[in-house]
Length: 365
Image (tube, rainbow, N blue to C red; front, side):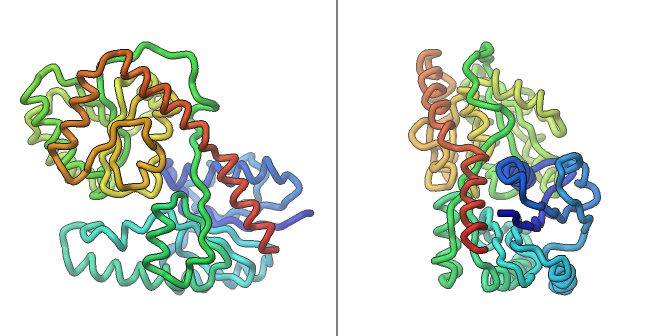
């Protein structure tokens, strides 16, 4: 059956982030699994190159995903195109006549009081606008995709009318085509991969690392891959005042090959977030056999399971405990954790995620 699917990929960034990887990998997998379908993709001008030579029909659109007037105009534009189904990789956007699926990656905007900075007024106003936009999208959607049970529960608590429409997709990783079997020699450094926004818990993380290093200067050096965004200057203030600053290396824009090498050679990945929709770096590290320290009672626990070292992200002492466990662990123990993580990583893939979307799309038509 030939289907015309219109995909809203305006959330894809020029410099690929987590949502960009999600959007691009699912789009490409849909095209591989359903070559007979016509795929039309909305994407920003700066990110267009990500979908070049894929066979998708590209429509450039840089309008705001959260602007009511822009989404109204875009809905009319989509209705003229008249696709059989509309798949939005964002939680807000146009509301066309076609059966629609939206994707809620997380609800941290609503659930983290200081997501937009320290201003109480700015946070309250921004949450109000976001909730209004999301409520409209959920009210119109035919189905709602979420990556984890954690996010599903968040959506159900915040929007009870959405309970019967939510389905879990999981996520995958594409840095490594399959779990890595041939190992490089692990080196004595901890790795962090992510941005520096509030949910990443950087102040507690750096405080814990600085205190552990002050107690034991044999604590492994810390390599941090941190994207330069609106939170980067705030991160630098915490970094530059850290007593272990000389033991911390920071990288901003690195290639995928450089990132692969870091995962393959690190002693362990540390990801102490207070909130995650999924936690892609954890899965990428697990695929290489790198042990992972991650936060319990978050979506990270769904990804890591019992294969990693779980910590309370709100406790500096417990973050220190997790790092100390990995610091003094024997090579045999680290290898055991890595093997468990590598095995668990096989239950996640972009192909499985895409199958979840395809079942929903075909059920709606």
